[in-house]
Image (cartoon, rainbow over all chains, first blue to last red; front, side, top):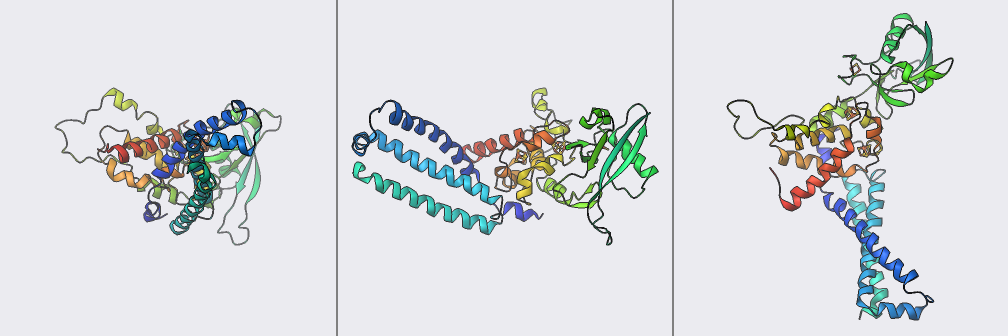
Length: 120
Length: 246
Ligand code: SF4
Ligand code: SF4
Ligand code: FES
């Protein structure tokens, strides 16, 4: 082991912190989502009823937070796993992070685009 | 007189004729109690003087004799064969192997170079910047208590050998070095928190620990490296976000 090889990996605190924050957000938003989908919002789940629900700004917000938190949590989890295997060097880890950010942002944009009719 | 068989994993990577690992059985007779380390001495004296293993204190304080005994991490000098699971059978066989996942030097001796390089990297000594006081450096009993757990580490390497994050990433500092970083982080007398921070606050430091807790299970001193590592993660946030640095 060379000393430089440890510090060549800078940062990590934000990823770690957001993994915790998104975990809490996921628990809260998933609970809201499930309660309103399966318990309170009883009745048939159809395009129209869901459309009615999405007319509330609160639901849009919950859905977007759910999407963003879920995407970050999942992709960062995947990143941690992959970094234990092939993506160990500074270069590979950085490339992996960039690719996952692109994938995550694309997913986020796509999700918001799908919700756009109710947002605007 | 009691009898027990030691099944020892032997390997000499330098032996051109037989560099592969293989198991060898040795019968040991003893009276009263027998530690695994005593059994190894017996083998060395009676059967094969070339058997290689490390030891020094024979009192579980130096950390040299860590091995994989009967399927678990143990100190050879601390392990009474009577307390092993296999001891209960009528014809007991105890397996003795080197710590897994470490480069091997010979037989039961592992190469600890990386382990100690990482240990040294986190600067495991007390660093003072302010001038020395007239007399001794005082520490309150409450502050001293914080050192109770991490100070008991004997650097045996069991935790390090058992950590899946170390297996995956050879540059990960590992539980022992990070526990030592924690030991100085909570020491009220130390004044080098800023210097050490960048050494462990990265993804080859604390964030590589996925709290798998193998280290806790492996530690023959029953220490909890994960507790120290999690404490460091929280400390990084306190320091980087709220600027609490001494
Ligand atoms: S808790 Fe952390 S340091 Fe301990 S074995 Fe697991 S990953 Fe390694
Ligand atoms: S923490 Fe425990 S297992 Fe790890 S080196 Fe120290 S004494 Fe050995
Ligand atoms: S010989 Fe020192 S710990 Fe076993």
